Length: 245
Image (cartoon, rainbow, N blue to C red; front, side, top):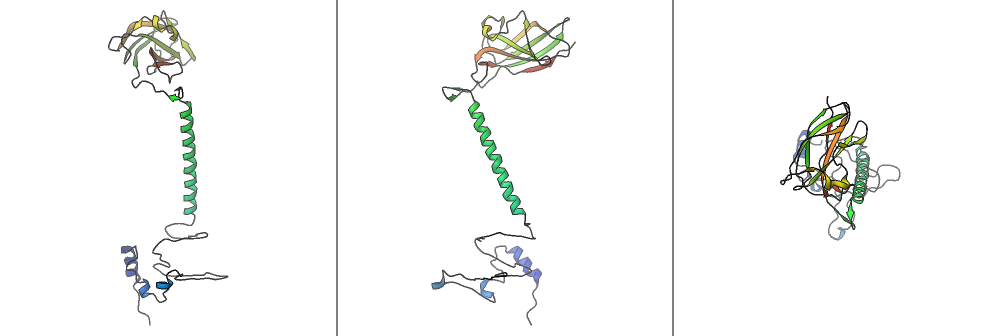
C-alpha cells in the first residue's frame, strides 16, 4: 500500500520553493523518467501523441505540470480556472492594442503640433522666456456708456510705449480706449510708457465704452517681437474682469 502523502506539506513546500528545486517530483524520484543526455542529448525527453484524445494528461493536487525553463506553445492556450482566467490573456492583448492605438494618436498629435509651430526659414522659433505681467485693479462704471480702469504691470521693456488690447467677451467685440492709442501699427505714439525697470503704473483712469455686467479681457504689449504670436508681438498675460457699477 502506498505511503500516505501529506498534501499540506507538499503545498507548503511549493510555496516556499517556487523554483521547484526541492520538489518531490524531480526526475531523480519520478516513476517514469525521460532523460535525453549524452549521445541522445538532442532527442526529445518525453513525447506524447494521440489521434483522437489528449496526448499528455497530468493530474495532481499540487502541480499537474511543472516546467523548469521556457515553454513554447504552437496553438491556443486555454485556462479555465486559476489565478489567470481564460479570457485574461485576450483582454491583455486587447489592452495592448488599445495602448498602441493611443500611442499612435499621441505621435500623430505631436507631429501636428510640431508642424503648426511658427518657424523662420524652417527653424522653429521660441518666444521670450519672460512674458510681461499686468493686473487690472479697478473697473467701474463712470457714465452712461463708459467705465474706467487702473492697470499696473511688470517685466516690460525699459521705457517703452505700451498699448492695450481690450476685448468685450459679452458683445464679442474689441473695445477702443477713449483718447488712447490701441492700434499695434502705431504703438510708438502711445502716451503710456513703462519705467526704466520695466514696471508699469497706468495711474490715469482710461475710459472705455461698455455696460455694467460686461466681461472684459485686457492684455498689453510694448512692441517687442514674438514670432510665435499671430500678431508678431509679445503680449502680457490676459486679465478677464467684469464691469461693476
